[in-house]
Length: 268
Image 1 (cartoon, helix red, strand yellow):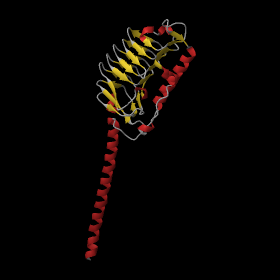
Image 2 (image 1 turned 120 degrees about the horizontal axis):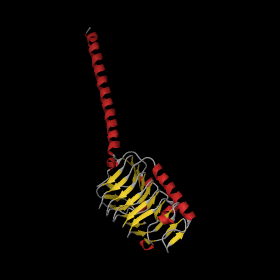
Image 3 (image 1 turned 30 degrees about the horizontal axis):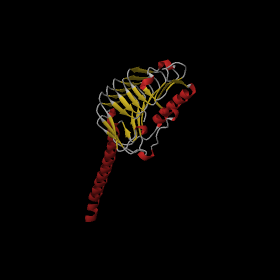
Image 4 (image 1 turned 180 degrees about the horizontal axis):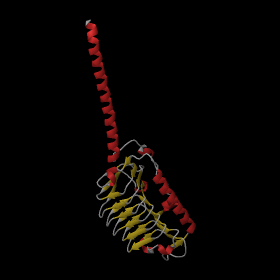
């Protein structure tokens, strides 16, 4: 009789115990999901391809240029460009740099362009532009980013290690940034909107990082503020604008125009 009386009580205790365990497991699952969601929203590192396996973007013939543009290069004298300059398919008359401002060759698709240094080479420029567009598509198509929407698009004040960065909105750089890594590390920044750098702000390289291995693929216009300094290769689907006194250690590869104002461009 005593055993019969104990059975209902034992059964009730078993049900309570199972229910409690189930709730605990659900809480663990929910906590993990919330943590994962928070990581993505905050732009923290998440599962990605190893940084060491990230390959540089092949620029092809476009890599021979400091500035390559499809619709012209405007300029407020005096700018300084170290490296080759070219435009295609637009006429060479759209190149507003003068020969003394360029330590390199100025290429044109026709007989127009700055004299006496202008070189006519339409076929090479056509290849360069095609390679530039292919490089843009390559950079835009890289998958498994190391960071997604880091800083909600505001990367000012950050130290950026090697890897693939994806931004689904515009990117702003209101304060100084450091890019750090080895001489063989690669950085690719995919920007779905515009890229704007504030006046007097600088990107600094550290640890052996090389500007030639940094690629900024930008869907919208790029604007570098007055006296700012930038590092890396800019692959822009639209215009690249350097305001008064802005400088870059890198390349300006634009599918529309490049606009300079007493700017300094050095091909790495």
